[in-house]
Length: 213
Image (cartoon, rainbow, N blue to C red):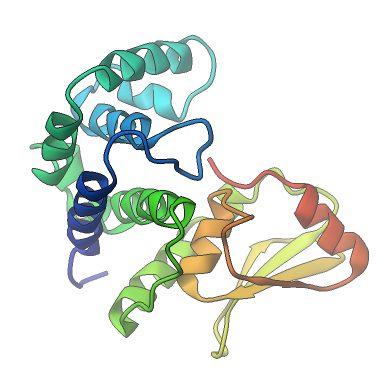
């Protein structure tokens, strides 16, 4: 997929917001503060040994969390400066990585900070909406893998665009803008502005499910 690198926009805007709010502001990832989130982002890109533990459970995950806590003790402005400096050489500069996992990471965490601090959903450009929809469509089955007893469809509100995220009957549908659907799939159910519809049992199955990595 060709197009601009929206991860750079999200990175810069998130860094600006972190500087504005400081290290003690809340995030949607309670009990994490902005300091905790900044340390997470730095570790993800700059600690190749611990980074994979951010998505793995068990001993590796515990190791990554210990390393993140050490990073969180660093000067907050230094952490934000490291985030703002962009992806380091290597994996995180690959085009596909920037357009999919990196855009997801920085968009979702930007909203983790924005919405926990009273900011309303943003109006995105059509190109940004298209990029986020592309990412919603990349692997929704992975983010919805814990859903059992129902199928799931995703609909871009105001368009005819739909995606089957998980097969099954009965089937529920989540309708919203690509940004809100992405937030829902990444486990930000309470913050995502979406509409959930379908048979009662399918809707209840979706509401019981923990989405995300």
